Length: 309
Image (cartoon, rainbow, N blue to C red; front, side, top):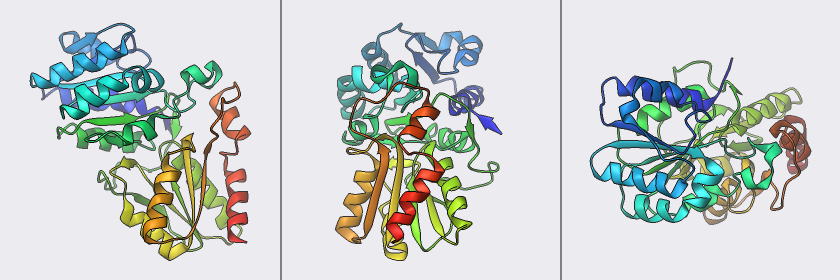
């Protein structure tokens, strides 16, 4: 079953809004692209439309939070995190207010529109801001549980999702999700694949492919980028001795760099960081870009074999 994570966000907000009148959404001409139209139709008095003005989006959300509301501000990740980075840093994080930022169509979801619409720096930039929590769910089951968790706290948060429907990683909602704790989806002692977001499904498929060849690959779903689960990383390094990281993000200062830092400090081992290169990418649909840059199971399995040699 496929379902877009942005749809799961709207579903969760609609359910919570039934009992919590402080839930509001703030959108920048993005209610449709964020799949928040059902919420806006059901609760027009709790919907703030700012137009294409991302700095205003974040500033208004921060003001609403200061007044006791619980705003969820949604906009394409490329614009939300780059155009409004000062407002995110100062109005939200420095002020430490209860704003949940939803970066939609992240990574190369808008692949065919080119670099201006790609969001490949957001994890690195927002992780460097004090007080800011950074989350990247893998599928709609995980998105639902993540939304339920963050709607009950007041921590400034960035949640990053893609645009397209994604395959299930979890079979149902019957699993535990704790913010800041990775989820082990495949067991293995030969190497570990640490993935985040919609690349987690690819990591699982890679592990299943390697299993047919007799290679036992552990898969860690690193749904929380900040705070990072250093304990799971150190255990993987000590127990498997080899790590591949996988992310729909620039390889510079993304998940791979964060994992390598932990490994170097606490449990040195081989680390191969796979993601998108530090360059202007080719133009194409996201699936075409993944294939071109080697973010598909067959290519990742080849990297694993090389690491095992």
